[in-house]
Image (spheres, rainbow, N blue to C red):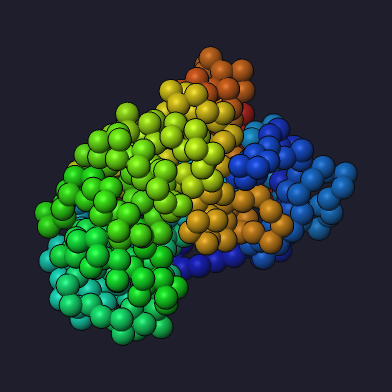
Length: 397
């Protein structure tokens, strides 16, 4: 598939039938009793049994051939720069590769890898507004990348956040990656950002890039950012007792990432379950990073948390989709009428020991992706990155 030049939505009706298993993305009801989904104008218009849905006059008809359908995966933590290129690993087309890992939406935690990234207030605002505009106008592979996340620097005042919000900026980059590292100083800026509708994420754990610092649980709690970024470290995690403290002492999002400490990831997941706080758990990759670019990072994290964490796969898929959509206020992530028609069609990988796709993930295997759809438009067929699936969907017209 060619790279998308800008936001596009499906024209006419999309109908997908013969779906073997439908994952809703919602923790409260992760599986739906449905085999057909209909979308128009890039939005879901009907979900149910084939006999109960209006499937006539479809512009695009897809036979799922028994594959599972899930909401498109959401990567809650990426660090883009410009276009589909990352200077961190000197790699092209990394976002398009994530598409082949089932990711349909990404959220920037700051454009921190830009060579010569400005640290003065004017430059910080200019970069954020430029990134927000650029990724609104250009979507590699069709992936929705919410970018333009300024990193807090000393000297920023309330009017700066008002200006950013008026320009369309809705995110803050990781608190702690700039010169603002103290909890009380960050708290004031986070509050200003929240006042103007800008969501915040805080770095957690040891430093990851030059200029970043160690952010402990006390600082995270004092800053009161909306998302506890990479609670399992990016890369170095906090002591497990501090992770427990963060899970117990606030109500903010608990973000677990691929490029972090796996023991800390599993421990944070266990704490969230014990506390009845699974709705707070969201997933990201924290890439590109020193460990590279991981096109299958979200799928690998799902498999890890389900298999070793002993959580049903459909619950972890909900963490990677609906939980993130709700906490991040995104239009996809859930199979609901009116939501974006962002879908991943997948099946058990060939020769997996699992009896079906969910059981295979529970046993630690990655699913094989057969098709990814964004805003009702087919963006890729059989993934070039996942293992081949037992079954793949077919476009009939």
